[in-house]
Length: 130
Image (cartoon, rainbow, N blue to C red; front, side):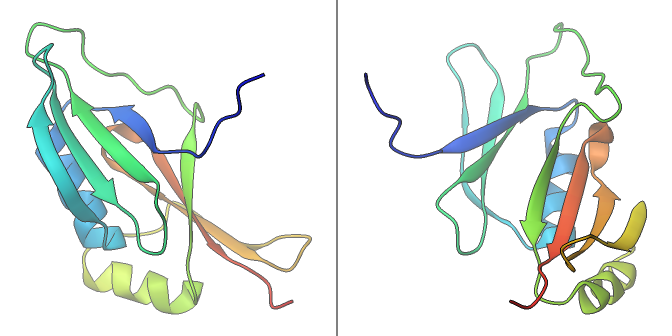
């Protein structure tokens, strides 16, 4: 039985690659690790996340392809933050707002959400002290 070695990236298809990349750079501090056009003509941008090997691949298909319509609660990605209150304050300075939370979970962690362009949801988690 072959074993998976590690998760490399998660792909999200979008209608406006530049708007989406700008959101992840400004709101979350992610950095572009590389850009290229796929053999099928899709614009691809890989975003690096701090302290993680995994990347987020943002993909915009060539014109003429059906538009992306993200279904509510279809999927989300989650990031750990050191201090959710401070993170929220920084988001506000940058012109972004939480869409839900903060909420204390049963484990004592605090979670909140922010909506990314295209309707994808981003979860922010401040883990409870152990």
